[in-house]
Image (cartoon, rainbow, N blue to C red; front, side):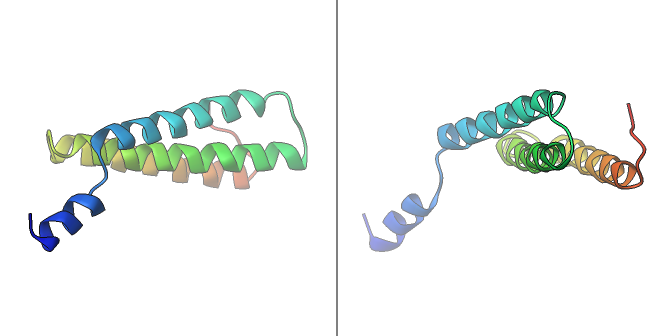
Length: 99
């Protein structure tokens, strides 16, 4: 094998690792979403921010895992996930809550 081929194979992340990373971020989102119900004040903001970042990371990783199967549907799903995150972020900043 040539050096270029080996470098390309090393740089590529395996689908199994991406799937595990997706599951970890999704689990982090679920756990932080549950934890935010039991904390208040500054801790609630921190936990909510961690949950939001985990949600965005899980969305990006879900898109990355799904795009070899179909490019348009995962892109549409990712778009709606990011729009949902923006709407929730704006509504929480204004003091309101979207249910």
